[in-house]
Length: 143
Image 1 (cartoon, rainbow, N blue to C red):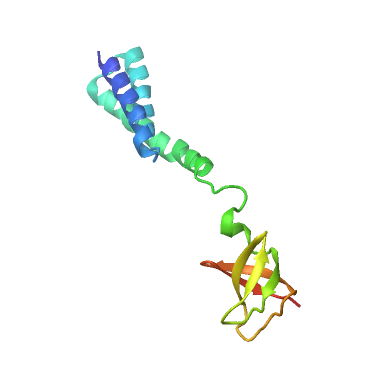
Image 2 (image 1 turned 90 degrees about the horizontal axis):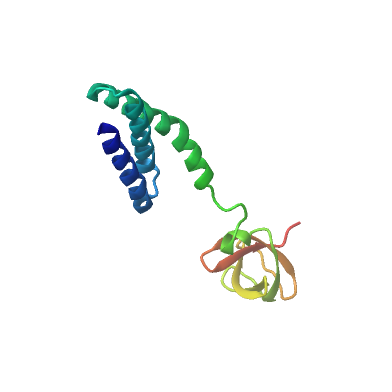
């Protein structure tokens, strides 16, 4: 009977993990399922079941959970949206100064300002995006 209780608890905890996504309940559910297996095989007393559950939980939290978090918590392998723009070249459409300017970047027109506020880039010059600051491309002509 104890094995059945551990089995149900493990399945409920694993199912509840879908609500959190933190892998905590999944580790507890895995430990409960492991305890159900050991309890079913060896008919342990309550303190033995608690010990098996505690050891299983510790092993899963220290061994399995960090690996799963590393695997599933990594950022995308390539930059997207504004993160992908630094390093790209842009064509100056309207004179770029510290106060105003526009560049054509990836087929879109962006507001731009120079990396060094004293620089001025005239129309038709190719510049490089150093960073994106809000909706403004911070550009530099290079050497």
